[in-house]
Image (cartoon, rainbow, N blue to C red; front, side):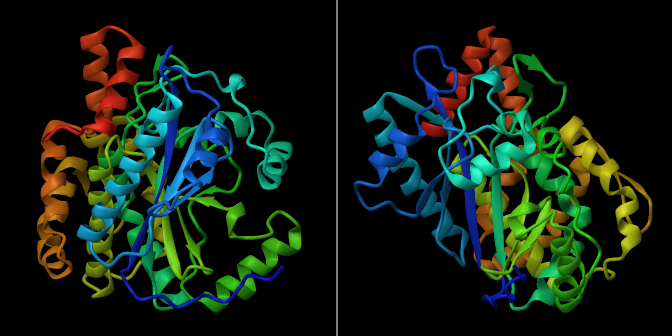
Length: 374
């Protein structure tokens, strides 16, 4: 079916989706608890939205549309507390993290939903291996042209969000040496990676999408697993590279960081995006996944090699007036210590070193979600 028209939204509004782990408190492996969890949560009003994910060891929560970091954080805390009460009732643990460190994909069960069965039939074992957990951030756009501009203007900042959110160092019982191993699972899908370089919505809708639909490969925007994709039905762009953080405080801070960055970019403070910016895109993306904040990146315009940590610090300072205008200074203050102390991936590795077990790492993630460090 044709792509629906881009629904205009108020610029710089934001919403968040978080995919969360459901954990058996006896052995700390994942557990197929989402049917029971969803049934329980739907018996009372929920402070947002909660939906199943592709396997029964996951759930996804969605916030309402927000204009401020304060409102976003307040709702995420309410959602967290509601989830924890439900988990306590069912004796199921809930936590963030981009991957579970030792679950085995073959043990997972596909949630009984027609679309999940359809994609399972197409992608086979890749779907069960897709039991990984991400944060998706939506930013409202006034037009499809604005959405495509932001989508491409953000290309050089994608490593920032990967490194700051990284929380998936272990996978299938092994230290991957990556800070974000989750994105390797996403990259296995044929329609992943970057969006085509188009800056006019009409060209995207009537040209690219219409041609792709005609091939029979795609039927809607859901079939694209791009790092950033437009969502015309919401009037947003959706950033998809973040691992699910271990705390809702980190999730809210990352969302406000993106909001402030989009405000900065919409003032045309940087040169216009160009196709050649993507010459260094996959290299920069890999550096952030593999080395996190210790990685380097190549600036897409100047080709200068930069420290990722220093580039984030410089950007945070540039964004301070924009954060002040949006009322999100607290979000930037949350992120500054991350740069010096390390991401959630570093936290999890430290907990493994202290406990000597993968189970100890999961236990730390469960506690972090319930009672984040001050």
